[in-house]
Each structure stands twice: as structure tokens, then as C-alpha cells.
Length: 281
Image: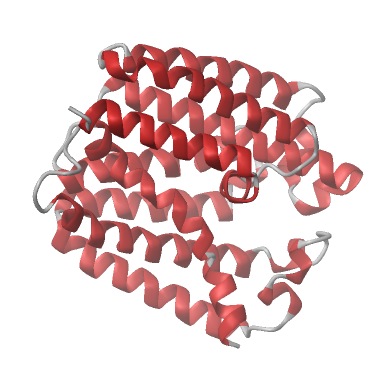
């Protein structure tokens, strides 16, 4: 029972919550005294919040997951974890996140609550409608970015906001494209919106937003001359993700990063190169 419950919490997806550290990291403030400690509680709270949302999603998705070739093995869909236990854990994590979030700050709490509202709205309504589903997923990344800025007291620049927004659309579209291709004619049975996307539309959105990410990121790093050398790494990572998608290797951003050694090493190289450019003197 313990292992299936941990699986339901999806701890590997907590990697997305590292977005909270982007503002201080890119703002050159992450190594200031006490900076890391300021981020521990906000990061933990978003981990609670995201796991609460994943539990809620799995409860609502049980019927659809049972029609999916791999998701039918999830703990709730397979019946290895009772629905009542999952619902209780989701409510507990929600309570912890909101109660402790108020201690971080009112603006941070507002963003945390916005994350819940967007996530619930996606699960209950917007995932059934094309484009709305993609923008809801992308909103989660933006909320994390802004929450990180609030937690560390650092303003998020316009170019960074646009880069993260477009990157989130790019990744979300890639995930939808992968689902539509892997499920084929059964795609609509698993996710209604997948049937409404015309052939070639998701491809076009990926190419458009991928190119736009490269442009906005380049404009962002021009302000930091020592970061201009990270642009080729950004370009390679975008193309590698596209390569994975078009090769049918799966489109989940977190799983792609963790399971693709080349993509993982590219991401690590970007962190090292950016860190050296900002903190290496």
C-alpha cells in the first residue's frame, strides 16, 4: 500500500517545482546568505500542492485511465489504492499547503491558490476543450515562476516571463502530440480534446513556439553577455525534445528529461554554463 501511494504522489513530477528557483538563480541571488533556506518551504508547499492535484486528477480520471494502455496500471485505476484514501491524502496536502503558504506571504499564497484553481478547472472542465487544455497546463509553469519571484523577493523580467510561457506551451503541445500519436484512433476515448485537434495542428504549434522560445531566450540573455553561449544549448535541447516527440518516445517533459540521457546532460550543461556565467566572477 505504501509504494502505490507514493506512486500516486508522483514525486518525480516535483522536478517542475524547481521553477521556483529560476528567479533567484537567473537573478544572481541564489548564493546570497540564507537564499536557499528561503526557497525550501515554498518548494515543499508546491510539492504538496502538485501532489494534491495529481491525486485529484487520478480520482477524476479513473474511468479514462482504464482505457489507456499504460495508465490503466496506475494505483487508482488498477484498484490497488482505495479512492477514499487518495481523497483524504489530497485534502490533507491541500490543507498543509494553504495553511503554511500564508506564512510565506499573501502574494505567494494567492499564487498557490491560483495554482489549485487552474488545476481543478483543468480537470473538471478545460481539458475537454482544445487549446484551453494546453494553456491551463502552461499556466502551472508560469504560476511557479511568479511564486518563486514572490518567495525570494525578485522581480521576474518580461523576457523571462515570455520565455517560460512559450516554453510551457511548447512542452504541453509536445505532450498532447505524443498522446494523440500513441493512442491513435482511441485518443478521444482517453482525452476528448485530442480528437478535436486537426492533423498537423499540434506539429505547427510545436514548431512555432519552439522557434519563439529560442528568440525570447536569446533576447533575455543578451542582457547578460556571459550567458549568450548558453543559446546553443537551449537550441539543442529544443530540437532534442522535438526529435523524441517525432520518434514516438513519449512527450511528458519530466519523464523525457529523466529518461533521455542526452537531454538530461544538456540540461545539466545549461545549469553549469549559466551558473558559471552568473556566479563565476
